[in-house]
Length: 353
Image 1 (tube, one colour):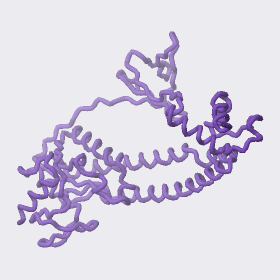
Image 2: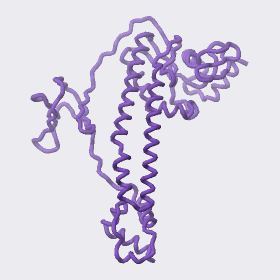
Image 3: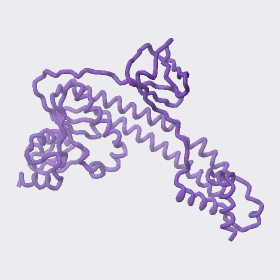
């Protein structure tokens, strides 16, 4: 009886209900002080049922990104003045350069800064080189292995290793503070728990360092891509369509922690952009078994790190072998982009039987 009475009482008064949901300490109402109730359990029960039946607590999320068309801004006295929702009022932003544009732009609020992003109008380059088709294999030890036996982005793994080690140390410390935070909650010491969370479990510095690492990796990926295009001078690039690859089967856990999905997507996005900009054709092929067969005789072999061992032809660099198989797959009439991997294996086995 008193259990239901306590729950209904808390739900009835917004002040008590708010403090329960926010893990704030409060004095137990007088009518319940002499009752033998497990207040910690009951407060937890109230929060659990609130999440179940009301979903997430509503909150307002301020917009941090918006677009402005050409008629919604003007330049004056080193500032850009943007039309606001209030009639006759404009938001004035001091510019750090003298550039002026006449196109739709994006305004971003990042921490205490305002950034204005303007899309550039570019003309694609015309490539008059004679035909040079290359195959590339995307890995994590090297960013690209090319069918010409060249490698690009050999330092990517160093960047990823360094960040993985840093995150391991940071998360180890954060886990220790999370354990201490939960311990104080169990002891109903809400004040100390909130102090731990506020001073040791914040996300500002954590997110800043992560963004800094991400920008470093992006810069290196672009640098490596430019090096590949300038040195190889391809007219067409053949590569794997990783949409048809099971991410969980392709790499072990240790590699997936380093080579996250955003890197894979970013590599593809930038590669396509730079191909379009330099008038280079790009072709996606079915990636099934390109790293498991010999590019010379077609026999199934064993891949161990950087070494691919063919039972007939011996050893070759595994990424180079894969890149040459990718290039050959472009001309394969039997294996299309959408051929099932089981059917691909059957076709390859029949060729060497």
